[in-house]
Length: 87
Image (cartoon, rainbow, N blue to C red; front, side, top):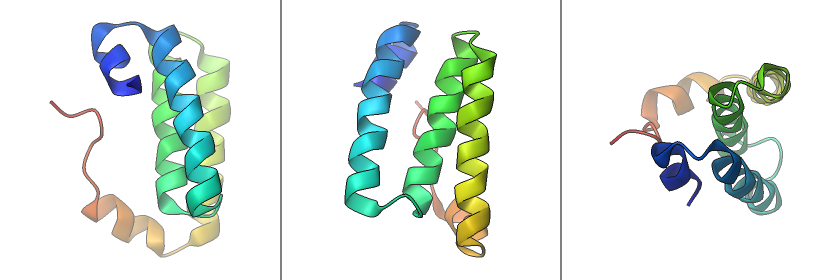
């Protein structure tokens, strides 16, 4: 749902739904998982698009912290993942 709202340009709804999905990912995969880190970076993108740069910066830092914590999985994840916002 979040990506649909993002494509429609409704950033407030996109952020609401994506925050819910981040919470679910944290519970299912854990905080130290590449999918969770990627979800935080996507949330940062939504905030940036909504011109809420302080929140965008906060969530991007959280994403980078998780990726740095998990180490080598970062490169493998980036090389093998697809863009959730593509087409």
